[in-house]
Length: 210
Image (cartoon, rainbow, N blue to C red; front, top):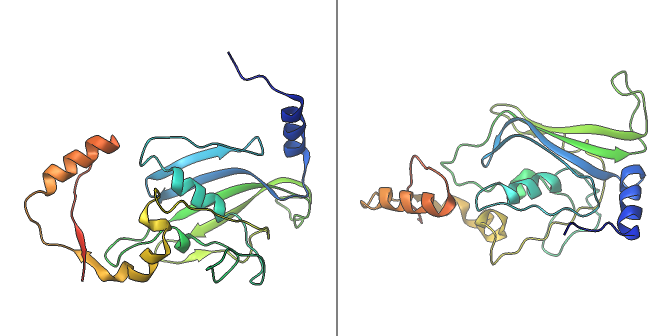
């Protein structure tokens, strides 16, 4: 039996499609580059509530991180306890050890319903669903953070089940891990992890604390 659309559903759908005053995120696209296994995708958000499902390692957490980075906010705006600033950047989510290669050449595009777009030759309408982008040039830093539309964004992680990249302790100690010496079990572990994750890995190695 299919889901029966209620009057409340219809009302919410109509609001979401037509409201330009609430700065609603309507789409996320990774137009160029690769982040944590995600590349060349676009997801449209057509309802106020969205559920993202997929197997381990399919990119669910990374997609949520991309969505959290869609907006900016004033430094003195509301923020969760323990956070220094009220907005998110990719460094909040993409935690790397010293010897990891930083992702380069990234172009993330967001579709946002907004009623105060700056009029330009490319976009002559001040109201509607237009796009903003976050860019990371090869060898450079993320650009255009401060140009993002301002909106409160709160990201709730579940520490018990999420990757270490979402835990603040990982940021404090990321420089304390280095590649450990091989002990002969790497290939077996690589194959076992690949079987669990449903992926094929070329290499596996341990990282230990200094």
